[in-house]
Structures are given as C-alpha cells and as structure tokens.
Length: 319
Image 1 (cartoon, helix red, strand yellow):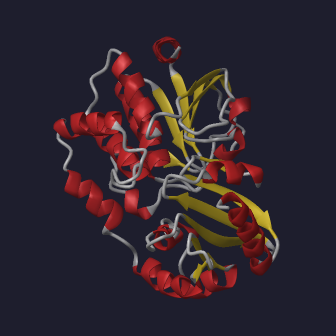
Image 2: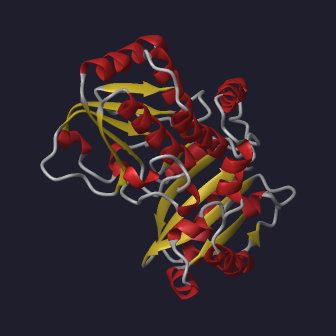
Image 3: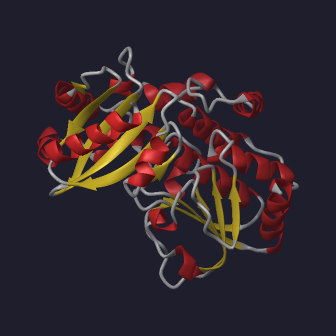
C-alpha cells in the first residue's frame, strides 16, 4: 500500500511542472526541513516551485539552503498543478486556501487523523515527515543533493529530539547516517538548531520558569506564559519553542505542559510525554491533535481555569 502511494506521488512529480509546497503554521524543524527539502529537490528536477509557510522560517533555521525563498503569502491568481501539504494534521493548519489553487492536493504526514487530500500518504510509524520525503525522492530518478540532505536531516533531528525520543527508530538512524554520508556536518546543524539562541529567548525563559507547577503526585508539571509577559519581554512566539521540555526534564514527571496565551481567555497548550501516556488522545479530546508523545490543543478560559481543567483530565488519565 505504501509503495503504491509513493509511486502515485512519483508520477505526479514526473507528469507535472508547477508545485506548491506548504507546511503547518508555527512551524517546527520537521515542517521547515520537509518543506525546503522537497522544494529544493523539485527545483533541481527543473520544476517551478513555490515553498510557503504563513509564519515564515524561525531564525535558528535560517542556515538552511534557499531559506530566503520561503514565501509567507500565496502569489495572487496563481494555480498549481500539484500542492503538497506536509506535516499538517489538518488542512486548515496550512493557513492558506490550498484546495482552491491546485489541481491535485497531496497530503504527506506522520500524524494520525490526517486523511485529507486527493493523495494521502500517511505513515504514523515514521519518525518525521522528512523521512517520508526521503522515501519519495529515492523513488524518483534523482540523486539527493547536499542542499536537500541538510534540510531533511534537520527535520529528522528535530522531530526525534536529537534521537532521544522513542520515535528515533532504526529507519531514522539509517536515513540520517546516509544523509550525513553525503557531506552534512552534524555539528553545524546541531549548533544552529540548539546553540544559536537569541538573548530574548533566554530572558523570556527566565520569566517562564518561575511559573512552574508540579502536581501533587509528581507525575505531571507545567509552565505558562501570558500575552502580557510576552509583550513586556520583547520576545516573540518563536522564542517559546521547546519551553515545554523543561518541566518534562524533571525526575518523575511523565507529562509536561506549556500554556501559552494566544488571546483573551484562550490558551494554546503543548503536551509532551515520556512515552507511556498518550497525550495525542487527550489533545484530540480537547479538539487538538498530535502524536502519542507530542501534541497540542487550544482551550478557552482563564489560566487558572485551563490549568484546573487539564489537571482533572490528567488525574483521570494517570489514575
């Protein structure tokens, strides 16, 4: 079934000329790495490509080849033969009317409950969407270049937590090893992603960590950020990436949460688990989505109300 799906996508690439490549808003490393990796490869095949993300590319990923060609808005009155939507559990997360501007919509993802598109290539066993892009490119008559390899490697590195998460399966290591063999400097990628942080991020982290709350049972913990604190700090939403990992690092904590206020009485919640607890299921119960170990949702209410609601859900889940 998977090979049939890959061959369908290969035929779409071979038979068409104009492509849109888009991933989800508020992009992570896998979204950006997959988008630029596929877009760079298509251009090298002689295709016309628009790569897009409505929120742009985070500063720490601006070392990637052709990052400056990533658009934040759809070109007006443009139609594409094919649109690729990558790493998005729901089409609406692309942030643009993709369905209206293409003849064929291809969805490539490793998240569950992501079944939209004329062609839907979904494999939840894959550690990253970048892995699926690698499979497709290897099925094409195309040799992966260093520019493409660097983007895909970042996607895998990011979504496996530098190969620390349970998603770091044998395929992740095998593909990454092959990409490194093409000339990638792992230190360059890792230092850009993890050791090139803006001062604003570190100052903001200093304001967020005092909000730490650990449950009475010690099995879940959270930190929080209000709009007021974010505005006063001079930082941006981009600088909050990875904050959820700090409460997860506490001994005994199985589930970590990061509450970020996005509007009056609205909080975006990031969930992370150590592997046993399915936070994806809990997130979907709240109208969100994600993986077993990493998920997110939006919940309305004051910070106190939202924290109380999640505490009740987690107490039930962990009982």
